[in-house]
Image (cartoon, rainbow, N blue to C red):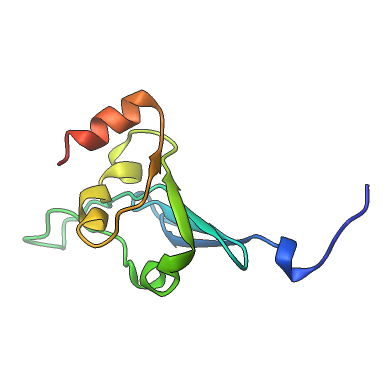
Length: 110
């Protein structure tokens, strides 16, 4: 097996939420030409966030690479992995790849 270290074969993984916290899971896996998003979850406010119902991830990085994105992979149907999908789809529409259960849960949000 020969290892190829060229930049065209590298995958960059960028967590946009859910790292070091519970909830708000969203990550971008990308190469030079393509990207996929894994999960689009929401977080829940703590007791000090009066009047806040949910917290959605910051989609600024997605805006920068939107032309590279080929789709969204949903790992499972928990709110911290699918809860922000409706907010995401107000701005972006990409194919979603998920189990039938997860797709059913997401479709009920629209």
